[in-house]
Length: 296
Image 1: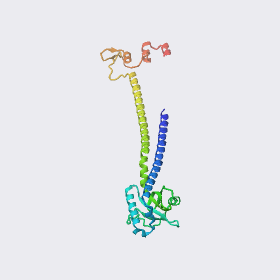
Image 2: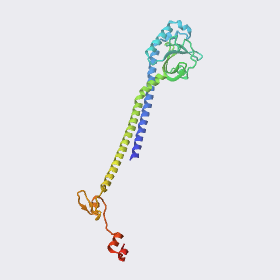
Image 3: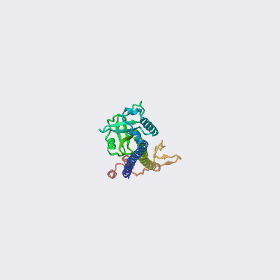
Image 4: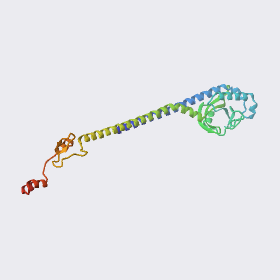
């Protein structure tokens, strides 16, 4: 029975672990997909707020620093990034005819170490970014590691009104660390609940096992005590000084009566008596008789 309980408990723990793992993985994937969709939707809204005509006037070099359109879009990106707590970087990228990807501008102040000046070549541009330039597909990619850190990026192309030609691609970055924190926070409930149920099951199993062990020990002690009591009930001991007659060998009891030694001992113990005669007494009583020697 005990072994069966062990197997049942172990099976239950494995099932709970499997269900918890499945639930946690499902929550992780669902949260990742939801975060990607939300980030992409935010990037779409930012891209719609940018005037393509202002963007078309930019050269993609340091000459843009004096352009009112540059300053207007720069200020706009700074305000948007500050309004989005999880947004790490916000920028606009272009591509030259030779395929080189560069930055039009970003949301960082010029004195920031992460500042991307107009025309800065994005040397470590990833294939995911290039895919958006080539296909015009809006999507969230990453995590991607570059000089600015490990980031997840929502990419949205911006087109000219008249020609529908790709002007730039807006990038909206989220730190991979912040991204993972958001996912983990959503997975804490199923993972924590699974761990709690497993620990509770183990605790109850140990508690029940200890109770059974204590019960067995208690029963064993009761059994030993009962057997000891029964043994004591069958044992009667003679103790102390027994007053005995020097001649007839009778014993005086507590009430002052003299009793035959056989009666006295029989009443106070489990001993029984059988009578015979020793050789010395036989010789004294019967003398040297052959028939008695043969019987003894």
